[in-house]
Image 1: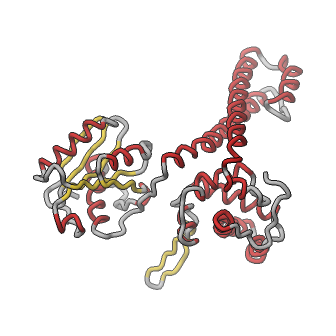
Image 2: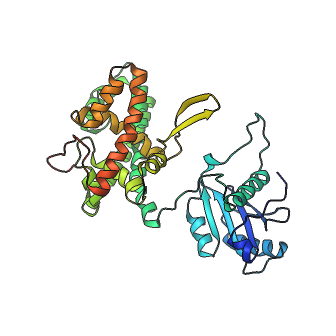
Image 3: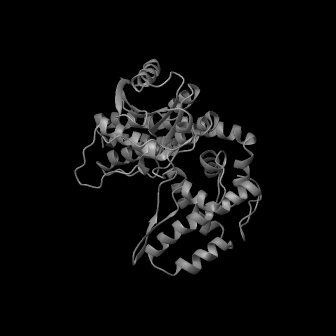
Length: 375
């Protein structure tokens, strides 16, 4: 762990030395581990988010490594709660920074492995040097533009509010079951009429708790309606969303997520890159005479992956004449539940490729039908 890192053989070492630094980002403090690639790594601790302290730490690291003040700086940190602001700020300061996928970082497979900020910082620094030397040691994330990043807030908040709405509804139902009351609906005018007729059967303190829970539920639904109204207002300025929603089985909400999370700002050269970006790439295990498939990687955008699986089930029902549906029926429909669950993931991978071609080139999936009017 403390071995002297090897200097990457690249353009920096051919002309002048450079500083290599890793950021271990914590809630209260950041650990900056640095080296010039020849000396033993050193480290500084700064308060989380203290930009002036980070700049000061970079200058102190250059002095400690005997580098010029204008020496090039390469840095990295793991993707996490801080998001992209630090990456953009470092680039603005002239630092060559990369953001890496935490799940792609190799770890010791021993059951009990030592872990601390210092060890993690040393590990990141070593892997940064190996990465700059040309090794494939981790996955580097692609930075969205500030506009594309901000546009994702709408549907992500809506998804979170939907979960909260379900939680409040389930809580009210659970409280009512304590007295053998089972309403058909929770929320809205039918609920208010039912509650007015049955609230006398509930003890006063429980009644007050249910009413407070109902107020929170109504607030969440008001916020959901406001966000949905914003989406509909912006729909005219979202041609890709409108285009995707023309396909049967693809609603406006699903088209919005696909556009903002995937098709709207990412560019793919082939279907393999597309499948890997949403975690639907295969992970074969081939060693010697052992040949087996371990399933999909699940290393990509989980929101899009979950959505694609849901859309695949909907596609089978609403696009029965498409080639994708016929392919699924030939391969998996006659099998049991397990085979159909495996098949739906395979269909999701084919579906995202078909939707990508439709969004980018207007190529309608074979046998698929369009709606008479856009969703």
